[in-house]
Structures are given as structure tokens and as C-alpha cells.
Image 1 (cartoon, rainbow, N blue to C red):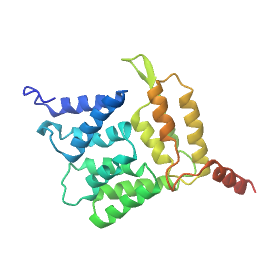
Image 2 (image 1 turned 90 degrees about the vertical axis):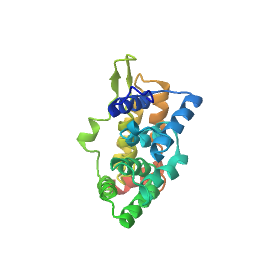
Image 3 (image 1 turned 30 degrees about the vertical axis):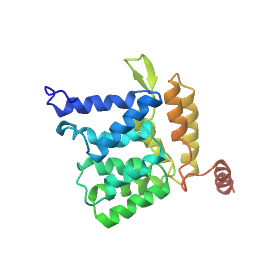
Image 4 (image 1 turned 60 degrees about the horizontal axis):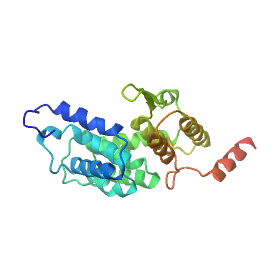
Length: 224
């Protein structure tokens, strides 16, 4: 990507997008995390990488964990930074997928900084939290896709991000649908790496999702 004859930013973007399909070991994952951190901060990158920066939050979601939250928050909360317009929104969406506390942090930043791209994220999550059921338009997007290169099914990372956002809904019906979706995905012929990602994405959001006993109580109250 740093070759002097490579002058097209969309080539850099396509190569960075390809990193979202890598199933790396600890060493490769660490290298990609370093790359994602550089993209997110806008440090040590070429001028052709400006389009690729918006993919940095997804790379951290795939190859990192909650330890990446401070980096994500800085990219949308620091008013001194001037990142590309889509980057704060992308960072905020990945940030809120970790739980209700993280959503509150994004909402606080949106009210303080008065950024429209953060306000749209807040409105989206507030709608999701009111869902009584998973909309049909979401269900169609969350099925495994066929990878023509490997000849196997794979789970798109953006689909996993969508499920993580749906966990923020307070509805027991949504939580049950996510549990059924997880069982269906794990029964598919997908790689162990994708199965691990799918299992981890369905863990309860902190201070948000209901645990099984809460689900049983919610169902009991509705039935009675």
C-alpha cells in the first residue's frame, strides 16, 4: 500500500477491507490491531489511507476487545481532532455495541460536542432500544454468506455488529431471537474463528441485555 506507484485511495480501501476477512493467530491479530490503531489515530499513515480510516473501528471489533474502548472514544469525543466525517460515527457505533454504559458515553459526547454524526447514532440506538421484535429487514441481512474464495460460508462482521446493537433492546422477544440466531449460526458450516466471533458477540451487553433468569421473569409477567 505504501508503494510509490500506488496513487489510488480506493485500492488502499479495498486492501483494508480484505483484513476484515482474515482469520489470524495471535501474532497476526496483534499486527492488525496496531494497523487499526494507526488508522484510527491518523498516525504513520499515507495520504492515500484517508478512506481506509473509517474501517479502523471494525478492525478493532474483529481483532480486539474492550481494551480498545478508550481509543474508540477518543476518535469521536476529542473536539481537538478533525478526523474524516464518517470516522466518528463508525467509532461511536462500535463503541455503543459494548453496552448501555458505552451508549450513555456517546450520548454525552453528542450533547456536549453538538456533532450531527453522533446525534444520528444516538437516534438509531434509541430506536433499537424500543424494539419489541427484530425487524424483518434486519433478519434478511444476518444470514451467513457464501465466500467464493474459500468455498465456505462466512459471517459478515457488519452482521455481527448489527446483532451486538440489537442486544441493547430491552425486549425479551428480541433477546430470545438473538439466542435462536446464535444457535442457528453455530450449527452452520462456518470456520471456528467465525463461530468464536458469533458466540462472543452474543454475550450480554453490560448493564443492558437480560440474563436468562430475567428473560424467564419477563415472559412470566407477560403471560400473567
